[in-house]
Image 1: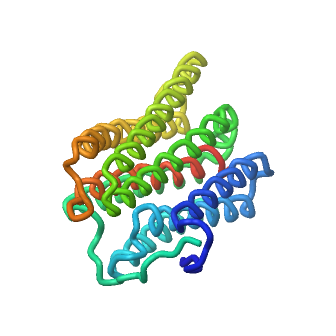
Image 2: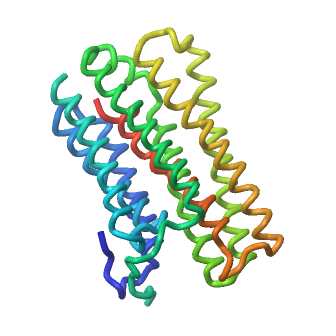
Length: 89
Length: 193
């Protein structure tokens, strides 16, 4: 996940604004009808939020690809397990 | 226009590597707990859905905004010290601490309301997970605030500089992990149903 170099905000500031927006959307989705669509939407938003924190707050976008892969794999694994559990309910 | 220097993909993890061992271990523990919650729910869908409706999602929402903003402040503190601005670094960290305190106060108010309704660990399986997960995370916020308080003191005391800021990155990395875990916890326990 890479923001354009000439973006008018610091990448971490832009990420913060996006995180606040995605959190608000997540909260609003909580009022929606239960189901796999809601689960998939909230999980997708959460994984994007997590990746923003990892890349732009933790600063892992600057580190060796191995560490970025480890964190991306963690988020994907946790999200995948949660999705699997909800789909098999 | 703000621009950043080109990405050096050969850099090591920020801060002391030892904290990353701790962070990966903590993430693994929370990951297992999240999986346990999800599979426990799959066997008790109605119980979890009905119980989840009794939670005040607004508290979870507010605490997510607070913790994300606190994490942003820590990111700005790290940028400040890398630019050699120790006082600004301290100010950002102090702001992050205030927000961390807000998180704790909001969570305590929520816990108080839960207990006033007679909710305990033994009420049912959902509340057991809800209370255990959120209290376990609460203790991590406390631990993170202790670390941030020490880093803030040292920043104001001039112990960090553009050339020596490992401590800020180390404490900051832990705080971001606490934020990351809450983001998943909020979605899982308060929202998805």
